[in-house]
Length: 497
Image 1 (cartoon, rainbow, N blue to C red):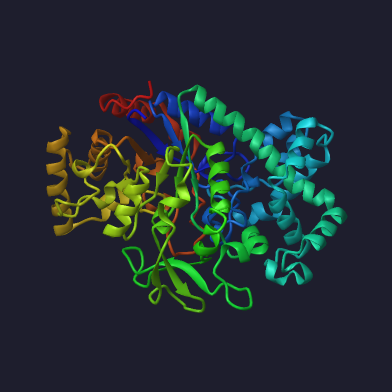
Image 2: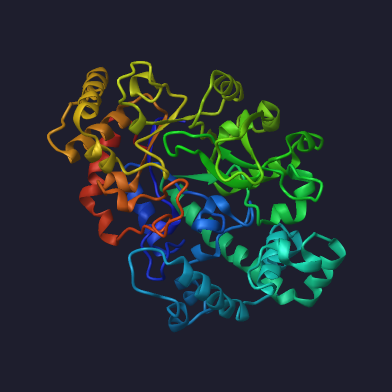
């Protein structure tokens, strides 16, 4: 792949009249913005339904698609909704109101389903293939039990094919409704992706490493996939030890994979998951990739992540058949020599973060001068403070050290060292990013616009209504912003053609 630049922008953050970003008009306008800005990459975050904390990294289904992203106006134009029906759940506000979406969005989509022609050959082929049947059954059962965890579903708490088949026959329209949400999402997504590709914009997708405890996978496949106790409940949970984000570590709570059992069938579940993701995106980023080399598990019942242990992951053998696929390894975190060797052996490009680069250590791997064309480089990820906030809040001796480092990096890269204001420092960091040897560079849209930390996407280990809720305005994509990005891409040789 030639040198490229791009923007990190979750679908949820796009402008939209219906409470959350969608696959509709504003997504197409954003593609036009990227095309005009000389950006050949759009990195979206996971498309899965959101779960605990409104996070797509805690989804109820590893390969399902978020019905909230379905564009309602397209359904209006298709005759499945009226304008009044599409607007029934709208509430004023600049952030995503997930509580309101939970109450209002599915009733609106059910009205569209009631008018949908189920005799269409493409619909019948879709349901016969059954790729989203597990999700549809899980969602229908969750609805039946008032949103309770599957562990509270009585006779359905443990997956039994005979009982589930009976439930499906008795509640077929409800199951079909949830399949309908996936059918419509895929139709809208494929049109959007084709539009982007035609304008030299590639989509960088994302899949979480773990699945949620209350998920399709734990309900149906737990004995095949996860480490369990004698009662069939998770005996270990995932997380990371204490680090820069948290003094007590991050206790994610996800069930831990039983890699030994998964190896017996050639990691079939993981390989199918990767295959399906590669069919959705041009490039696939796998979150927490270091977990394939070694992973951290904490005994069930612990209140934080201080008392876990490291374990060996499956390594390269899981990726047989995918070693030449367009996959990016999110290799951030505690990267030991063992982890680095394992990731290098697999061979996927990793990630570098410029916010971590200016600490006075000449060997810092995030410095542009220490980066190679094997990596994707970012100003920050969805888990970082915004670049403007990082610059603004760095003061005293730490700021002096940052500027000494930055000046040296600017000299090596031939980039002007300009730090007269916080915005000037941000522009200098962005120019360093674009000038780096990295094969692809990406900026969160928050960093492009010099936004403060109130606009950040996620705060790790913190449950907050501010997470995953920030939305941009149409005015954020003005021509001066587009032209500034185009100039950076042009001067660094990163235009997509």
